[in-house]
Length: 275
Image (tube, rainbow, N blue to C red; front, side, top):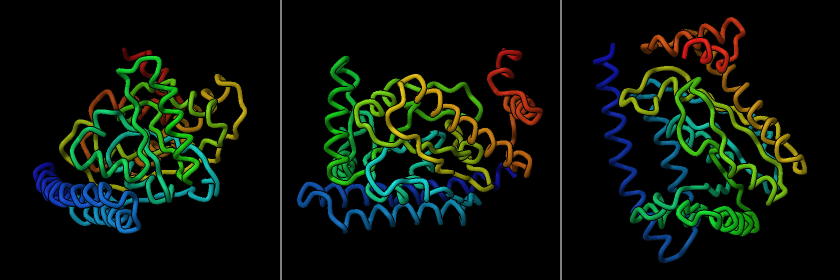
């Protein structure tokens, strides 16, 4: 099984990179010449749907996205759990005009950076220290004014399933500064496309857009509500996949956390007893 899945994973990655690089160059050059265009967005949608099809056909990973009716028609922030590159494929179409929050280093990659800017991507330059958040807010306001929806991964990086969460201050500052609803997104993609694993495992990766959190809450109340929504639903999606049967190896630590979650023990408590 691992050997077969290694071959399937290799086939997917070959397809993924062989098309991503030339598409990034095409969109990047187009962005330099004409900025954001329908042609560029059509290529982005092709990239998303073709990769999802390749994941299904080559690696056995199916996709299920629900709750898109919870995305407001007007400006909003979409705050998502982040476990793998699959998350980008799942979230972008529902956002319709997405504006990702991304690290400056990613924006400096040739062609990729130009392509990202064409899609309203907002860079955060952590080297600017205290200036980074105000500059990010200015760019986010401009993106909202152009009709974009802000997309942020509040933990700033990919997390393995049931690992300790670490929500950064950026999403709270966006919530306070932009005064728009925040749509939490829960997902379980890390069970099938792991953060540091070259192997892809068959199954159904699920993402769920949850009811929006209205603007105007105190910062700590908003942060607590966001974490409870994302982590609670993410745990439910992970547990449902586990109960259905995972076709992948499960290391002892993850299995212990899964079993604890199945018994109704929060992952935080399970981590405390096994650390």
